[in-house]
Image 1 (tube, helix red, strand yellow):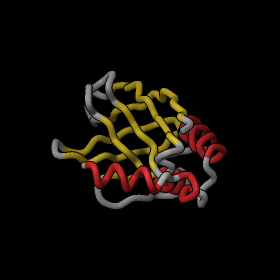
Image 2 (cartoon, one colour):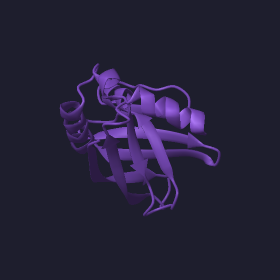
Image 3 (spheres, rainbow, N blue to C red):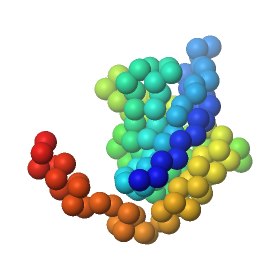
Image 4 (tube, rainbow, N blue to C red):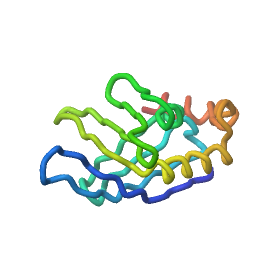
Length: 131
């Protein structure tokens, strides 16, 4: 399994004077090739979101998402990510170049469309049956 982690500073947009920058660790693992993990531990311990890599890729160019996660380009330099949880919605802005760079690196590890070949289905079934 290969792992790629990068820290991206995101802006938590609150609409008032409490907006702040958050350092978020973005992690991609080849054993879970459809997902990108966002770890907000420095801001809120235990706050980890798994986002679809395809959703992030689509959201760089046009609004994308249903349900709890939405991604959309904001301007030429930022992408907006809305995360809805039980406590409300967090609206975050991330540098589009940093997100695009991370996604390009993930595509070099596992090209889009080739995720099925990177998945260990036997181990996944064992994990499921052991739960």
